[in-house]
Length: 437
Image 1 (cartoon, rainbow, N blue to C red):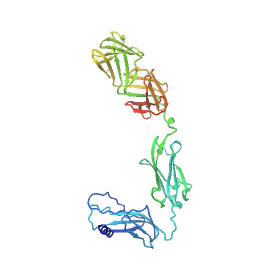
Image 2: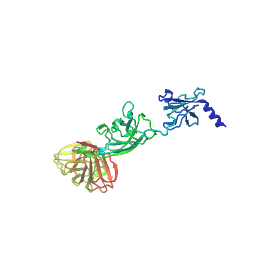
Image 3: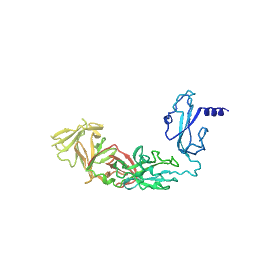
Image 4: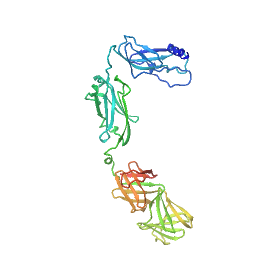
């Protein structure tokens, strides 16, 4: 009983109106639902709804409107207003209207003769150019006046949420194939527009046919196609120049020396960069050590673990107490394990250090304080692409470094195949990359 009373009440409060193609301003407003007393009206119907003159059209609230027999065929908007007399005081008075499109056909028509455009396919062709295919699956052709302004049908593309160009049918389908039912037209999307070139990798493209709603169709909800495409440009390697050299900047590099075994290592990112086979070491006192890369000429380093200082000595005699000019290396920190006057081992931590690689000659140097710590004779190097390199210290097992100069990133690859593009576990290293073209 309650439902019958409510239905009757709603019918009394609802006004149904039929408009031509111009929509009154009050029917263009939508307002979010808020708390408080509020009546709303919704009409559920196809997009657009279709009926013949004299036939009935139902709404979601079961209110039926009969079109009078002399209503001229054409496009209309069916509008409904709840509480048209404003008899109910509401929290929001701006959401009492709803509309849907309505097409009335001539009485006695045997079939609806309308075009129906769909975006049939989006695919990539040579050099990641975009091919868009639109088909007319309706039972009538697209009228000629829909190819040209001011009534032209538009085709619009988006790359993600960004507009990616659009054009009208005369540009998309100059041969007029869609003027026939079953016609199919394909267009290469602005091949000369550099600003519409896809970036390498995955792109999400969406194309809308009749985006401006200038064409009356059998169905209005099948005009859009969204597709993910992968761009792998064959010209990528030609577009990227081989760098003259690149630098890998370390923020955690260090040299560690163990006096009892005279073993020396240089490391960064938890990986050993050099095992010190090309270094000379000498103990002057339990707290004083001379260190020298074998190619250094006219100087060496002297480490005082008691003072925790490092000096570059010029003009002295390596391995002996001798006069010479000392220069303190202020960007090198000394950490001692054990007694500072007789350490178990000590670390020289470098504030700045880097590896430099020259692709043309495949030469490596590891440098700090303007001195070469290693000439990379115990390294393997592979130039895979103008922007992609594999580097590996000879003693490393099961992993290597991959350097991408385009992305300016260094990766530790585990389980891959050195000097080949292969699957493997990849971890980004905290190493800066500088490129000299």
